[in-house]
Length: 185
Image (cartoon, rainbow, N blue to C red; front, side):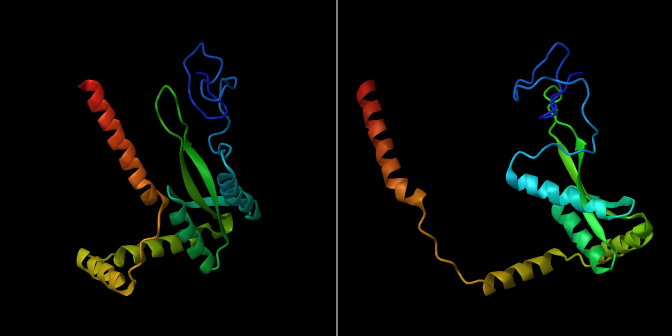
């Protein structure tokens, strides 16, 4: 099956160019662990941050993976606080496909040096157990939310441009309805 090298969309046989990207299709895609090029500067910065540092580890091994970057960052920070050098990388787990209708999916892996794998897994297990034992019931969560609401001062509503335009939009709608009524009559 032909694939678009840019958006990773899958095509039926006979197609030679991507309908969305207008680039020639290829027979196979590059290695699945390689992330696709970022679309904007912010994504480029994050992708660079997630791949550059793993080269500093000797024989890096993935010890934790998460679909959300914040979870991986939390575990990386826990490992670093425990004295284990850890880095993150983004890994493509599913390509997008025009035929299949799938969207590209990524996970973020936390990497450690091969020598630190056993210690890292022990720290991760301890952290997971601590988080599971600290889960709060609904009453505790409601109490905390209520305390936070009391502590936060009420903020005044800021002047918003959309509210300034509301009378103009209402006037245009009224004029359109009057014209429609006159035409129908």
